[in-house]
Image (cartoon, rainbow, N blue to C red; front, top):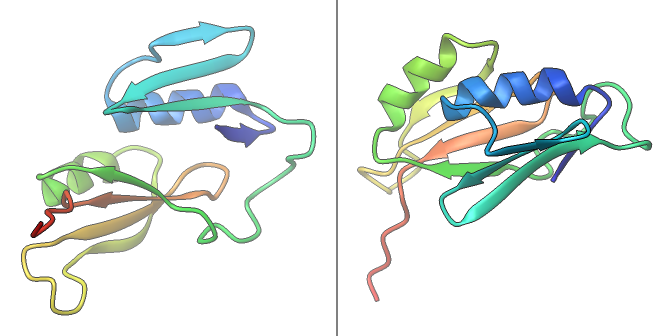
Amino acid sequence: MIGTHQPKILAEFYKKVFDRKADWEDGGWYGWQVGTTNITIGEHSEVKGSSKEPQRILLNFETKEVKKEFDRIKKTDAKVVKEPYEPGEAKGMWIATFADPDGNYFQLMTPWESNN
């Protein structure tokens, strides 16, 4: 759940990020099924203004097309925090970071492939 003081604005933003309308909407609450996870957005009485520590919790959205999705999302209202990059020795693994209208960070990441 992403608590916000502006649920409609955040829902419109994530509609662009997910490239589809919410799977459900009820009384100012919005929800998407994203992979095996549910993302819910709604008003929270204790949340005001922008995130003070946006890197504390990062939402990671896996995609094999990090660069392509980065370019698509960059055209929305998303603030680019970090352009796509390969972290350390993890060749072929890509990460890109954005901020939403509340300042929360989310990342696009190449799917984790376990050697197990």
